[in-house]
Image (cartoon, rainbow, N blue to C red):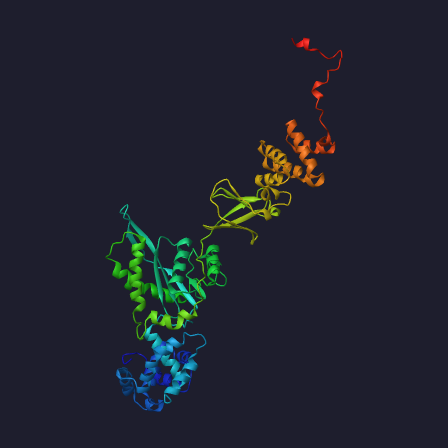
Length: 516
């Protein structure tokens, strides 16, 4: 400051207005100096313990020497006492509901001769700016998880081909404790992003209130200051874990300062130690990354007597929401039109899934994972099936079918045979003949239902007789049984000597001689 070009008169103006309680912004505007420059003189003046009248009584040479030498003066005892409290104050401020004013009140109880609230806040801000200039924002415990990809890639050498394969590096950092997670992934595509985010949640053992991505293409489809459009799959992942996606504002570097600072630290503490090592797979590379990551998270923070891990365990772990019981299943999507038979085709498997028959002819969206297939029409889920990968087969929920078609799924050949056997063995034999015929299953089932229903309409005994007569005719269908019962042919008595009756004489009847 002794070599500063600012005039001594202007310094006096700065200190006079400061002693009058003027704001730093007002002082900077009135004197024409930057706020940072003004703050330096104010801080030096405050640390000296002198009054403005005492400072103003110095001539210009003494004033110049004072501001040049005072920087070398050790801070007074009450400032030292306050500075020892700063790490604890900084940690407590991250807890929900804690304020600077309540902490100042606690400080004053222990140090009655300590600084007033305004100077308390001023020195705290000075300390935070000196200890960690990037962390100018106060983050609440369990609130935000900042994620990004490092600008510099890492690599491994394929054991099979010897090819050098470059990989992306995913970095996530909790706002309050600064606990960091790092993982190498094959790409920045949404599949790799979601898996890395999920692994980060399991690493910290909980779910933060919000995930803050840097407008990554895999997370944000369209950037907007007020309501960005999120990638549908990434949003579904967030819903599964009960968190919110809060993309940073475009062209607002302060929104992502924390994670950008983390990236720089990762370069020095993870990239640098691993630079000379050769890895032969992604898993080998990640194992080395995670070992270096533990050293980083357990290292004491600058100017503090605790590490990221200690701070996380004390203030942030309990503020996280619990993890869901099941991990997220990555879903893909396709579109299809419901066919006339009430099914849609999942083209990747060539398998067909039923939907309620009223959606026949509608265009629907299919969301499918490794185990489930969900079918949506205009944002409403209309069907849910277990995924089956056998091609050209059908998965049918009978509740989806029209009532006239449900019997196809409700009835089986075994049920019809069992029903017929309960009436008589000849009825069972006739039903078997029906089922053995080469016909469409729907037609055969209709015949069986119609024939067996005659047991109630005409009585079991008449049905037995009708089936016996139809068996003797060698005719197997519903209509022959119906005709026998309507014409009461089942009640006819066969003559024992019918074959012995002579043939009638008639001119049009040829005798046996004709065929010799």
